[in-house]
Length: 274
Ligand SMILES: [Zn+2]
Ligand SMILES: [Zn+2]
Ligand SMILES: [Zn+2]
Image (cartoon, rainbow, N blue to C red):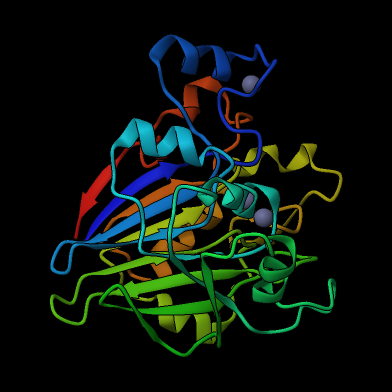
């Protein structure tokens, strides 16, 4: 299993357009990018590949990293930075299998699969597979499970991807607070690589109108506001899931410049062989 981190940034990316903060300036100087979230997973046994989320930076990412166009894809939730790159498949793909959860979101009255079908009705090459969370499905020769996470007000899913032949396992937290339900944690446990949402360091919670929550024993918040994990929350999750290796993703330019490029914060283009 070859994993390529196509997009490691939050919804504005780093550098952020029009921003001259020290972090964005440092990224420009060093030629570092954190575009909007997407992960490419190649099955080297079958030659197939699976894309997690359609970043608005889809075209730039595929040109830059030279990975193959996917045979199948998953949409974790309907936020702009994860879905709105889907229009890029128009006149590029002849066929694409798209997997998304089939549970109705009380907020929208639709499942993720239904929203994709309605918003992208003109993409006739899409074969949409409404998928039941917590039940593995075979995609590109992998056992893939969507797991509910906590990203109010929308429903959102993490993903566990396992190669049944080699035992290699990738887990992604999805966009989530620290409050991931236990059945989902069980599915995500013991990965070779964990990609965990860590939008900002915990010390920035004082700037969020709702502060932080899910504090650890030292009072450090593991959730920023209500929607995302802090760096500390993501690292605690990695410990609890017994992750062999962890990369923090979905990172905002609000990380101070002296913390923004430290380990284990990911940057675009990183590649892992599991
Ligand atoms: Zn900035
Ligand atoms: Zn989101
Ligand atoms: Zn996001």
